[in-house]
Amino acid sequence: MLHVNLIIAKDPAEVGKLAADIFQDIVNAKPDCVLGLATGSTPLPLYRELIEREKAGKINFSQVRSANLDEYKGLSGDHPQSYRYFMQENLFNHISIDPANTIVPDGLAEDADAMCAAYERKIEAMGGVDIQLLGIGHDGHIGFNEPCDHFPVTTHEVELEEITREANKRFFNSIDEVPTAAYTMGIGTVMAARKVLLLATGKDKAEIVKQSFFGPVTPMVPASILQFHGNVTVIVDEAAASLIK
Ligand code: F6R
Image: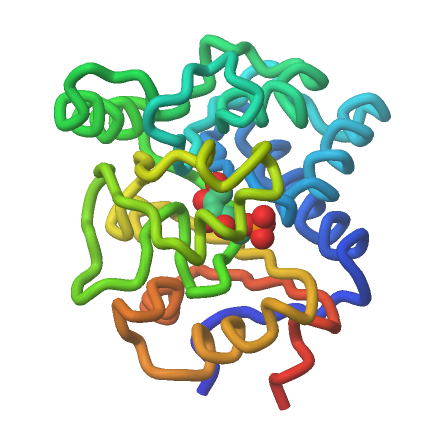
């Protein structure tokens, strides 16, 4: 039996629209809700859709709060490849959200452990995440929780796998510039969200989508843990669904 609500959309644009419908319902029902947000290519159609919908008066972000999944270690928020910068450029600068109500792990933290612990407390103080948006890495990572022998619980520092640095080097001048470490919410942080929405698009995600939701739950495929969350929606395009029968 499939333990997640799986929706197959035609293409990335339709994935973005269907995801935006879910966000719209949550924000309209709870105007000061807490959105758990992700970076990467996959959420871009969703973010574009949300910007358009606020312009059209269908959604209002003025009271919304947000907590991002992760950030590169060593990059400041104004570095063009930092995840804080990505969020400003692709969403926050174009909607009415108050920047003071958005949190992203601090890539320049001097005391990494203290910053991570404080990040968890900030999410708790916000009342927890209402909907956590996720992409998925080719190795099954969610946030920067890479395959390993256990499920890390809380926000922590991680060394990045070569496959992840390779996948992300397209945004940098060369692989040498891709940070070797990052901060990420833990699997426990993600699992504590009241709802999880995972998006995957493209043929290159088909194999990991199959492994994550139709295979065994294992920390070697971090996203597979979502099978144990009671309220998960997975929206994939036809290409990413191509290995699911
Ligand atoms: C981003 C994140 C990552 C990405 C994943 C997929 O904040 O946490 O887990 O969601 O690497 O990235 P894209 O969407 O670029 O394929």
